[in-house]
Length: 102
Length: 342
Ligand SMILES: Cc1cc2nc3c(=O)[nH]c(=O)nc-3n(C[C@H](O)[C@H](O)[C@H](O)COP(=O)(O)OP(=O)(O)OC[C@H]3O[C@@H](n4cnc5c(N)ncnc54)[C@H](O)[C@@H]3O)c2cc1C
Ligand code: FES
Image (cartoon, rainbow over all chains, first blue to last red; front, side, top):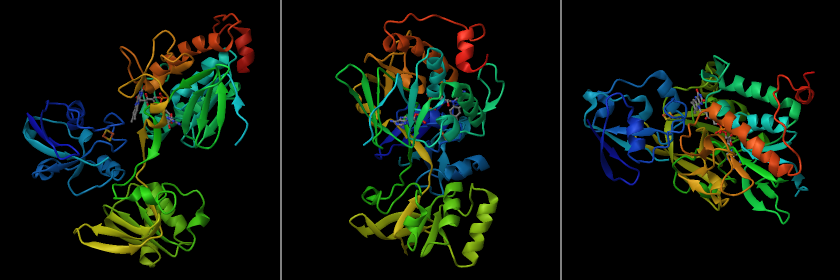
């Protein structure tokens, strides 16, 4: 499964997603500069991304815990998500995102 | 500036690793001072997950981040560690007599033969919102915490965020402000419900303005703020008066000055040997999340183990002429005396 991720400089990267991994893990491994300080525990908001190309609408909505933690993220937009809370599966092939500013 | 403090061991960071180090050092009669930029002990445990249960602390089937910290504080009490909270360690230099000197941004100086860096993921620093030029206003008009309420009396105050800090300070500052505007990216809050209700009452009474918006630009001169441009959910921009801007987006960890201590770093972690947990700089040790070696796992229990071995090595540096006698806490009356458990 493909992941299209734009880094903070605006460069586009095509990463290989893995079923059962979180989007945060793929972005971190891919060297996109996602700090993910809490390691995916929904406790730090440093894995903030914007879902693009209509992917925000395609995914199930964020949980209440994620919505709450997004309050601690910077530059939140209507398409903001915490990438550690998105567990990849085959239906997300081609998912597109932009890493949010630090 | 105060006189330098002299002690056996100076510890950077009061997270679980730094706290347990006090215990292991104390058993060997070594005294410690700790510096942490936070205003309380516990590091990640109390800052990031005070209420969450931890399940992998040996012998404690479940314990929250706050409870573990409280228990560590109780365990190290007999050794009277000295804490310097709210201070960032900014310098590490070698003294003429071979000891180390740690300095903080508050002017504290600690001279000790051994330094232990237990800095975890780095200093907890406030998150800076992505507003162009915000740095120029920091300290004069932009603040990440409220230290003295009086400084804000009679001012146009702009607060951003949706957590307890943002709400609490909205409620506390509204009565003394000339005007108070709260901005948040949604009309929902992760703060205590009674604070949210109270804030809404103040909005209805016209004492607080609330906008679902984000701060796009700051306007002023020479670091003195006069107004801010906000953008609402519809992207429409508008201006509000603001002499002080207080963003509350929590904290993030930044390695900070430790990067310039001249220690050997691997991916921003301090490389240590696994017998002593000493860095390549003699007398400077690293334990907990900040240290790295083959097989390192960032767990609290690893930090505890590293602290125990570090203490043995630190003893030989601090007391070069003394013999280290290995003793169990269960059976040594000498240790019982130190722990006040006779
Ligand atoms: C959400 C979450 C869940 C976790 N769950 C578990 C778990 O279940 N089990 C487990 O074993 N681990 C868990 N961890 C990891 C665990 O919290 C860390 O391994 C542990 O906190 C590391 O301890 P430490 O003392 O090395 O560093 P930290 O806890 O990071 O403390 C370091 C301290 O040093 C201070 N500091 C750094 N630099 C400076 C400076 N220059 N000046 C002043 N102060 C400075 C920092 O402010 C901080 O307070 C979890 C972590 C998170 C975020
Ligand atoms: S990694 Fe911390 S919230 Fe996602």
